[in-house]
Image 1 (tube, one colour):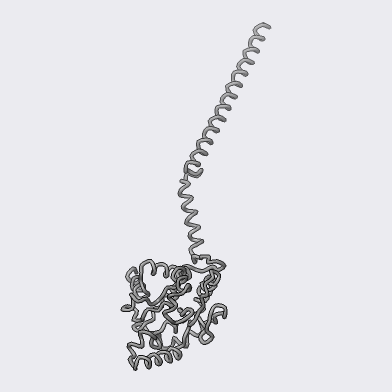
Image 2 (image 1 turned 180 degrees about the horizontal axis):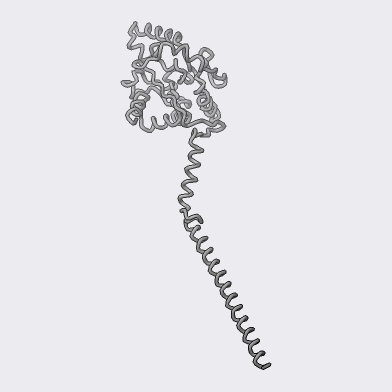
Length: 275
């Protein structure tokens, strides 16, 4: 009887040991499976799948779009010590066919600011449109840093001043107003009345032989300026070649106009067709 009890006790112990071993083996197997699954998921994330099932490339695109929205404001460019908005645009077209409104001469006065003396060499006309001021001063300052004595000669001119200049030119050409208008714009049709342009250093053909002109040809577009009147575009602009007269249109516009070889009349028409 004692031997039977002893044998039964040993059998129970053996069964407990067996089941215990099975349980430990099963637990170890589950742990190994969990480890393998985690490793596979991590590897998939590295290959382009996120833990929530989204492709990581999609996540990057979403992030990029967010950055674009945040940076969808002005495109700022640094020119030396100056930061300028490359998107800013001033495409007001003024010519014989597109005269300024009668009230413009008085209305524009509120938008004019004085050009500092270090940027100009004329004390008779000294103002420019406030929105153009940062660009023209940055351009002149950086030209001077490059050793080029660039200065503003004639920026904004009032209707009265333009009328006086035009009448004097009419007298020079014997009363031929049409001929005079190719050299000096009729009052109300001059870009100078807008405050968006300027003559530099001198109103003379000799400007084209100077280092100032060379610097302008190479760099003016970076500040939003274009040479407004060229000889090859005279049939369109109605104005003779003026190497000294430069018009602010905006940095991106200036670069595009030069790349396409268009004067302002042509460029405005080009944009109209695109729209």
